[in-house]
Length: 264
Image (cartoon, rainbow, N blue to C red; front, side, top):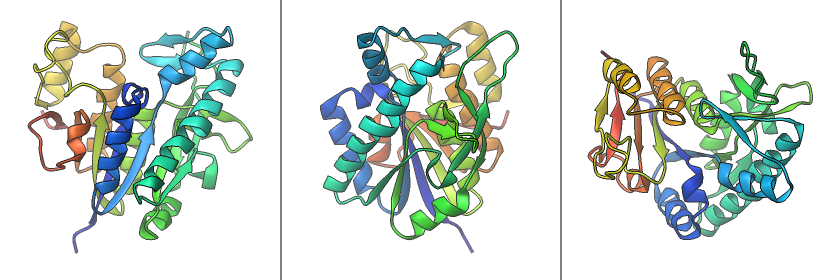
């Protein structure tokens, strides 16, 4: 018997920062038929509040360094303000959403990232997803909305890359569902030429991905995003797309987005 379809959508900060774009996206997301799950970031808002408090943000290879003060800010912004604003707007569009952090329902267990020669502070890498709990929500017609905060089950909250959270949830839920993972941001996809918004690369496999990195066409924040895409496909996710909000208006339309393939 074929599995039921599940759409997992990760929305980027540039859309969240644009009130009209966010409202339009959430309306379209709410109209998606079937089971769905939303993951959101929110880096720009956290940066704004951090700066207003005299805190400076630091990024290494597209990932945020999270000291104790920054962790407090991102928890307030991601798990509080943004998560509840998004949840409230989805309710407005008759989507029965439930805002969650990784600590809620023990949904996302993580550990403090340990990397040689780099201290990411309270940045977390995912260890486990409570897929059974998430499945219960989905089967009861509740749409989970996850922010980028996880926990280590020892009382410590951790800041975790939202792209990674989306990928790890997609992998875990592929045990039960045919999962399509969509990364939605302000661009139409990964661009061959950053100055040409229509130069979308419509297909990438591992060989092409390595060539794009070597040539410098993709770099910084896009590198971990694509790494998550390939990791998801290798571990059971059916399909991955990267593009703008038009992705969720027609989930079968692959011509305005990037399709990822894990085969060489």
